[in-house]
Image 1 (cartoon, rainbow, N blue to C red):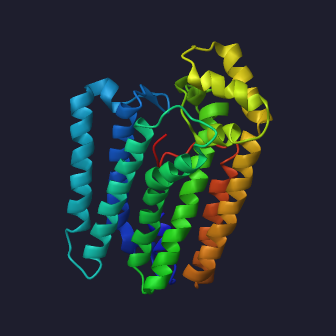
Image 2 (image 1 turned 135 degrees about the vertical axis):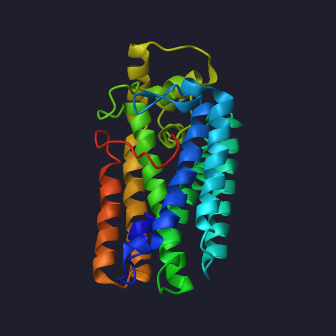
Amino acid sequence: MPLLSATIDGGGWDRAGDATAAWYMLAGQVLIHDDIVDADRLRRGRPTLWVRYGIPEAILTGDALVGAAFELLTEVPSAITAPAARMLATATRHIANGQIMDVTAQAPTPNALNAALDMTVAKTCSYLRCGACFGALHTQSGPEQVAAMGQYGHHLGMIMQLRDDLADIWGDPTDSAELLGADLLKRKGSLPVVAALSSTRPERDELARYYQSKHVPDRDELRYLMGLLEICGARVWCDLRIDEELAAAHDCLDRAAPHPQARQHLLDYAAFIARCSSVGAGRSQDQPR
């Protein structure tokens, strides 16, 4: 993301090399800590860091990555050092706030959609916003273009979260280790779930009863619950929201990327992310689950 956004004025992507590395260090910290919080033992079929080395070691490794990110970002001071460091700090704080919202959330209810969207904005959109702004800061673009790139990153963050939420229910065929209906089993109030609970279909009541219970479903029951989500319009809602976010991202690029080639590359990237939102196209590795 930062490398692409560094080309919006027609310049080279390599200007944002250090910023991109710092951004990915933050991603590493987020994923390491997210796996601990969610007690996930596998990520993409491999043992998570805390499983392999222990929880204290994993927590400290994540902390060290954030420190290294700021160290790299400020190693060669320039006019953009302070705003870049501030962006990274803000993203780190917002992601942590989103994690707190996640772990303190109650069982999803028909009124939980706005809370789920707020959590996505904090956990995922803030990270993609930071990455899009990072690259733009290294260009000759003005503040309005940098802000527009941040909004572009926000919309891509929402698309990515919707895509991953779909995969966490209906599975990701590219990840053979992923459990079908994983988020249903954990009773996570992901976007498809709260969208289904917000519907007016009578089947939502049965879905709500499951989320209020402590019953451990077997595989057949999980498939039945997935069917209830379908009936209540969860996947349709997600697909429509992805289309809306993609259109909004295009509007942001109209303001942010005057260079034709850069604009096309960013359009292609957004389209790729949106296509991947359908089950079967794979999972992003750039954000927490």
